[in-house]
Length: 236
Image (tube, rainbow, N blue to C red; front, side, top):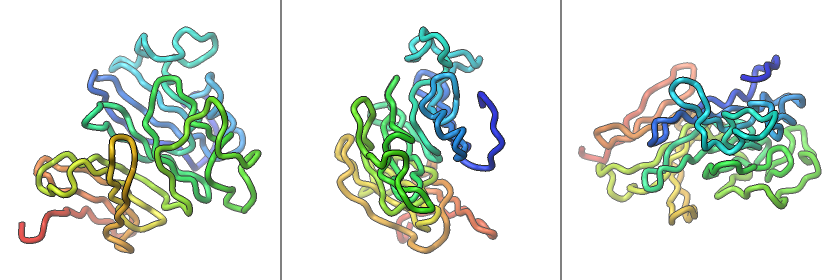
């Protein structure tokens, strides 16, 4: 991370390879005030989606490669704590899920040079109560989320389901919930989220979800006695 700060929180933490072989890296803004403001600064890697080549260099078409003082690895900015990221199998675009504070967890599709607003805009509030910044949720030049939760579910890993084992789930987006203690299945219509179903309710804190080569859905719990669950159709 550039620069470095002493904080135990908001590392970000997801790695996803693009279809071109570039590596997407999601970073958090470390939670503390000094890191939070850096989500909007282009000389800081905090609160960003980064895109690099396998040798660590920035691709030439990254949006800020020619801007003086900007880190060339930055692809998008204004993020808080992205703990889930996945490629949309239909478009190849990167989708992320970002923790809000008290409410305001967001799903976004990531596009070059876009500012996703944190901490200037949010649908959440401070954990201790009160507004974040000026308490606004929209501002010109900043992206609106595709979907958000209020109250927060504390989202973590995410995966698109494009297998055949569960035909009725094909095209769905799955998101794990930590504080919410469930697995969320979102129904999509293009980039619109038109339905939400909650599975494994109160089963455990869900840290990650992946689709296996067999089409099963694999769910990792985050508990003192953590488990790896395999979801398959009844009778299979």
